[in-house]
Length: 227
Image 1: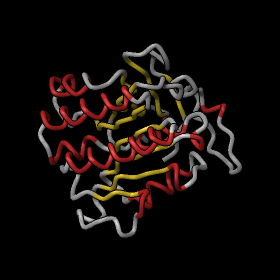
Image 2: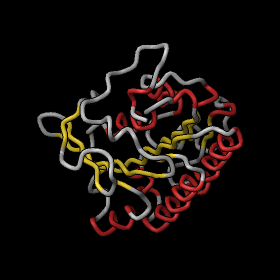
Image 3: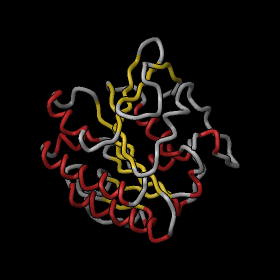
Image 4: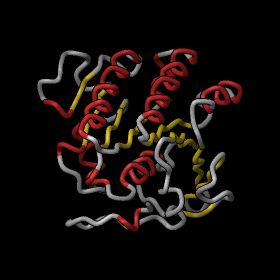
């Protein structure tokens, strides 16, 4: 379902031109959003996570650069979701000293390199949504930070496990990577964990295209996502 099917009691941001097809990512798939720095990839991730009836499903965001409360506020500018439907894995705020300010909807891990801790927290939230019988979308911003703390092999193994669980549960995954953080060869290895790539670039306006999927624009298409 495209974002046009989403209804909320609060004012929602205008859907960026050219994104309606991209926002219909099939359940059971994971996509990689990639492009240069400062090209609104985080906001694109939020838009993909919020597409459709976000209030009726779960959303989990892994954040390596912004604290949980900021991510929650930013995501709610795209979707009016209840606290029970938005969970966050925070990799920077508490340094692994617990979740005293998070309660059941937040988990804190020691660093973006703590792939085991991130995986445990993600699995907990995904299992919770699955046990409740609701669909979920999983976002991760950013793989670039993870690769500063962990080697390519460990990050790929992490992605292989997480995207496999997303597929098995018929959830949807959206992961973000800055362009040129790794070599073309290493990027090709990472891409094996995903079903499609959403590329982003900045010209006179922001443009996107989709590779490896039968949805979304194949050619560079102007969109409007304000930072």
